[in-house]
Amino acid sequence: MIGLVGRVTGRIGAGLVGEVMVHVPERLGSEAFLAYRATPGEPLQPGTMVVVVDYQPPRTVYVEPF
Image (cartoon, rainbow, N blue to C red; front, side, top):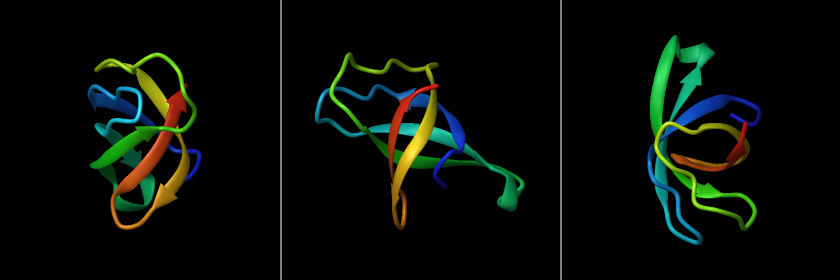
């Protein structure tokens, strides 16, 4: 999961959970994950491209803008 690129579909605010759709090549498609910002910063709005920097199974990722 780390290093995969996705798009924010639910706003990710400071310390708040959001949602991203991540393209998972091994599964031939995109999947929704709960998402947190990996480092403090401005909220990430829907449509923002992000990269996964950490993954906690089963469906939580930590992201940063791509």
